Image (tube, rainbow, N blue to C red; front, side):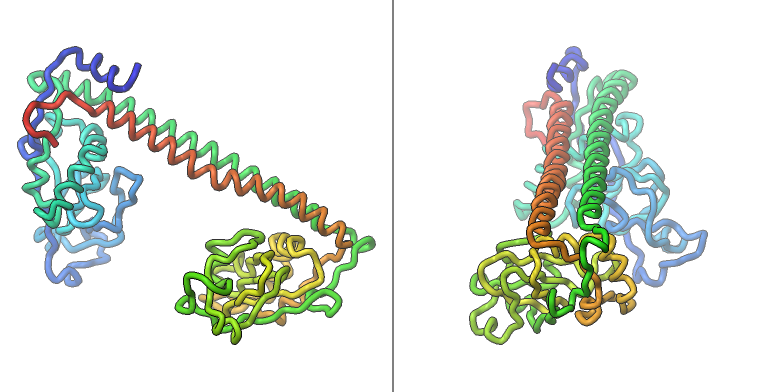
Length: 424
């Protein structure tokens, strides 16, 4: 049975009244005492001060706040109780939250309270989160007739009340709808957890095989410093900044992009610089490894990408490139191993910004099997990398699909018969 069909069966011909929210509940705007800095306190008797930053988009509850205000400040604000609603009226328009704590709200919120005799809290949350209501808010804001969700507008929102003359039956119907929607939420969360666990396990397996493939018996494979003239040399990047980027031209890699955009290797750059800039820049050649030498944490510093394009590219400062005689992918995969990480850690310097300089990278030992063996290992790891990347990219898509499915059923279950007059 479809969600719409289930709703019809659940109502069993019962009347649905559409009532303005202001007739069912008390709707008021929040209030901020001025100047707010005078009332912020760390005292244990302070009142939770609920701001937009204390919420998260996918949570329906506010359970803690970053700051408190004094009791005097709270009296000048809008005091609410656990179980009351707040609705954002100026940022992320119309996003509802249920309070899991007592607290005071600033004027970026509207409050909804005193509704429980007619409305189940979770039912109201689901309805206010539905596409029909969220689109209604956007229509009002985009029309230019209002600049924010003022109390009057929220009060006028029509809310469906099944069986209005039988409060007990009405609440029972609402509770059943909530039960179904919460079940969908739980199933979506369980699937997300299962997919995430599978991805974590696959990555763990991949890391294990990569470590095994790049670990050699020292009697059979020579280990040499990466800066040994028989292996390669590290060259510092130049003064490339984001302001130097243009829409097309000579390829370039900025150190920050190594963390956010690139994987183990690439044949295309995300950004470009002019020919004039390139003539003065530090240029990496095809096959070189480009390495980010600064990071905010020890694990990420020295993340590397093998450049497999057919032209030289510019490399930024806070990065270096490694010109070598090895298989480019083999070297890039080596930078991901624990044996590289162990050797790297003693050379990390800095406090807030962590860095490893090119001279110290040159001291790290790397195994040197034959070029044929390097190519074989790289080919195997490419397959693992492709599989892991596919799972990593597929996970958000699968989660988004489930969330879309959930939203569809939610909206169907909340699609009550509407009155002939203009509806919300």
